[in-house]
Image 1 (cartoon, rainbow, N blue to C red):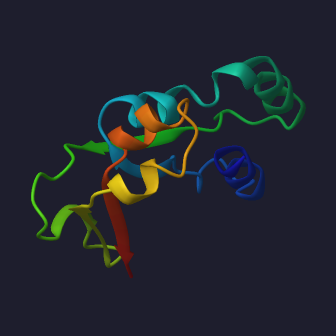
Image 2: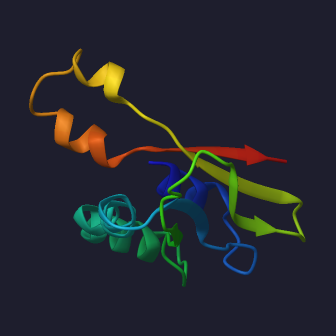
Length: 117
């Protein structure tokens, strides 16, 4: 929704740039990269109706999940003054609270990401 809404709100193709998403490499990056695929027909229809040249896009900046507990800068954009940091955390205490279907997913999502503006 965020990727599509941003495209709708930036009505000038010359001003539109892909939405940058910073996430861990692997399953999460793959999910973000393919998020617009199910909406391809609807997006194309809206693009043609609005006489737009560009379609909504995402710029995935994947990073390897950090292995230590020290905060690591994983991406930054000096022109906009943005820094994204990540740190490894343990979710072992929360795993007992989840159903068995969610445990494998949470075991893989073990990084905490912070955004500094």
